[in-house]
Image 1 (cartoon, one colour):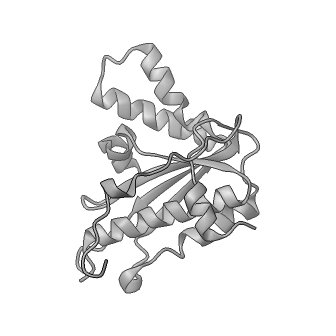
Image 2 (cartoon, helix red, strand yellow):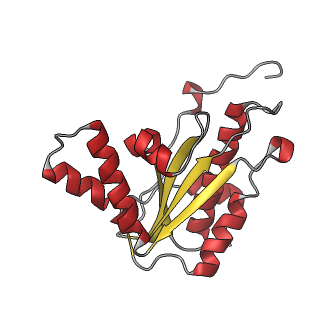
Length: 188
């Protein structure tokens, strides 16, 4: 088993995924890892919609309706591409931040907690031998998608986590220049 530090430093997205997807017990492991995200106030601001099998076709049809609501003249090619998006992996987890506005914990913190839950799932998927990629795009903010998932105005689709077996060799992580994003205050 890899250490958490090694796993974090080696994390890469797998943009090309195929069957097999996670077995049911692995999906449940991913979800158990998700709900261990820090959750100030114990609000459990997350909601996960697990989409697999034929459900991916239904999600694709929802995405196509969302595209047409935004661009009624979308080309047949664009419509088909959009409809096939959920078929890029055997499993898609729609991660939704269902926030509580009347609580002292800021909405932003609740959305971040949901994002951390997605990161937990992605790392767990990799540890279990799968690949994963976290996507957002137009569908995350689409009014059609928001309405379908019955989101309140403050709620957010944080992303779509695609999980499956990686196709090809894993990419190597690109080294990050810490000097470009880190400042030290105080002791040197």
